[in-house]
Length: 172
Image (cartoon, rainbow, N blue to C red; front, side):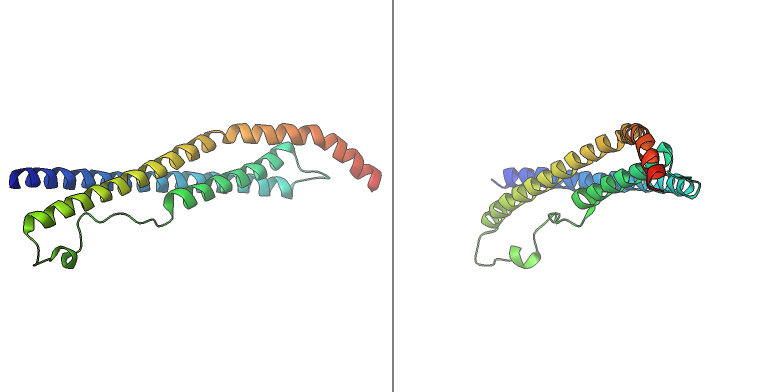
């Protein structure tokens, strides 16, 4: 029985370590993506600000698209932070010492109960990693759609701006 417990404990501990390392990798990926998004937001904001400074009666389609892209990227970054980066509980690799110190029970019985606890911690870490990885994938897809968002906003504004210009002339 002890050999089986030794084997199961060792395998379970290695499994949980892998899951916790995976969580660390996902956190690093989220930080990298956030850095890229923040750079994109800054670039889009700079382009929009320059365009708004030079706007004569109406800003250009590029200026409006840059401003819209900055808003889009901020929304994507917010999704990333909320669903992937805000602090979440991670299971501890082992139980707390006083929970394990049970002098009234045989050690093998304690080890069996702790093996069940270890299995629960593995399931918790796996579920958390799956959830974060799924949101990271969504954020990546949203980020790569950014050129399409820019183009769509530019095309819509270009289509609207002649009408807006004539309204501005009629009103002024």
